[in-house]
Length: 69
Image (tube, rainbow, N blue to C red):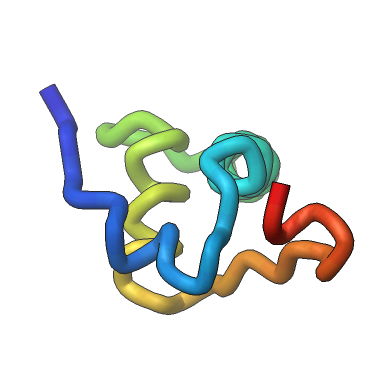
């Protein structure tokens, strides 16, 4: 089971909800890109999306008004 340390991604008061929403959105993009190329994914799109955030290839930008909820 894939269970990474999320503390680097959740720094600066980023909410878990924002992380889940961004990961789902990125996973859909990965899935669509693979489908368009006719590529079969070995890893799950959610795992690939979470890796993108953990390795810093993508950054989650959260509106200031919901950061401290």
